[in-house]
Amino acid sequence: MFNLKIIDWRENVFKKETAIILFILVLMLSACTTENTTMKIDSENDENPVEVTGKDQTNDYNGEEESLLNEDDESGAEKKIGPDIKYLSDLETISLIDSREELKSQKGGLLVDGISIEDEVEDTNNKPLGSAQIIEIKEELENLTEHIQDPKELYKGIVYLLGSPNYKETIEKAESFKPEFEKPDLPESGASKGEISKSDNEKAIILLDASSSMLLSVDGQVKMDIAKRAVKEFGESIGADNDISLIVYGHKGSESEIDKDLSCNGIEVVYPMNSYNKAAFEQSLTTFESKGYTPLAGAIKKANEMAIDYSGPVTVYIVSDGVETCDGDPVIEAENFSSNMEEQQINVIGFDVDEEIENELKQISQAGNGSYYSADNAEELDTTIEKEWLPSYIDLAWAHTKAPGPWEILDEYDRFDVDLNKIREIIKIEKSRYDQAVQIIRVEQLTDPEVMDELSDIIIDEYRMKLDLMSELRSEKLEVIDQEAEEIRDMVDEWKEEMRQIKEQQDDLF
Image (cartoon, rainbow, N blue to C red):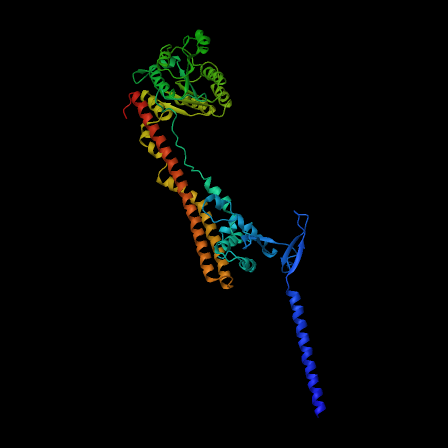
């Protein structure tokens, strides 16, 4: 029994010694694996290798490393992250919005880039992210929050993923908006004397019938005298902003057959094309009397020959009491005149004419792309020139209606708001995407509640800033609309006052 006990004791000692030896070996091996190692890395800027002491420098990214928001560690070295969130280096280019230019420069988010304006603003369910996108954004947010916990940088990451790509196009369209008020139709005869800047494109030729029929009387007055007085006043008014010329026809020879050739060729420019000179123009009206035939076709042809020498359009005004009596064709001549330039016109006043003559004079005005007016006596001739060739009293009384009124201005406001509301809708839809991203972070508990609160505050602040920027844009455009409406009102008021002065100079009572 004793011997057996000795053996047992020895065996126990042996086992204990063996266990101790094994434990020491394990400790030694463990120390070897945890001991700091020294690695030599070839330097591109130094012929000698650089010694780096530390833990094993290998990683699981096969050498691919990306910058994480330029965050520096204590030694000043840039932190590195893996390729699963390599886009984070792009967040450096994203900043909080404080101007329209910054908002326009925003690039489309990684998960919504390419979405059209129509698709973005047509979302009425307030669910801008589908189930597949939610899974994708969840993965991206997990990567993002694994490396970022700063609320501002988290916001940039969300913008990078879900920011709208449509700000630039929609804002620039709104910025280019221009009011489209209808321009008032103000006859170009209303400038004060001596204040008109003449244009080579503004020229008028008056053709005055001085044939023997103009010796007849209307209401106790000779038609020629009535016509001269009317032309004198018309010349003064239209000459305010046009170079003018006066051509007389039918004032040569007589109505005798023997004088027909003389009379039919008696077409004279008594006031050559020039700016209006009151004394010279009135003097030209005293140089002729009514005598012979009516070479109306020849007079129109003469006006056409003159018009060819001018670069701009010419308007012809004819005052006549009869039709062609010199075997010409005034309709063909009128067609020739109007065919030279689209803007050229022949307007005709038929003074105390019968239905047959009126129809023939209408054909002339139609062929000349102009209008025909009828006057049966002195008062109607003055009224026709005043109403059709110059603004009438009624025109002046209602001149204020030619300027944009409150409803027209509101219509322009509404037209601009169509474009602006599109931008506002994009802002709202974008925020709802951001809110969904925040909800995912909250549900998945990817960051602390305090960070969540700050992130939500940033999203709200940026949302309000964008809406404020759009309100500023609206204020700017409404001011432009109001300003243009005011300019048109001023223009109408000036025109109205100038017309008053001209009428007063013509001894008219307003």
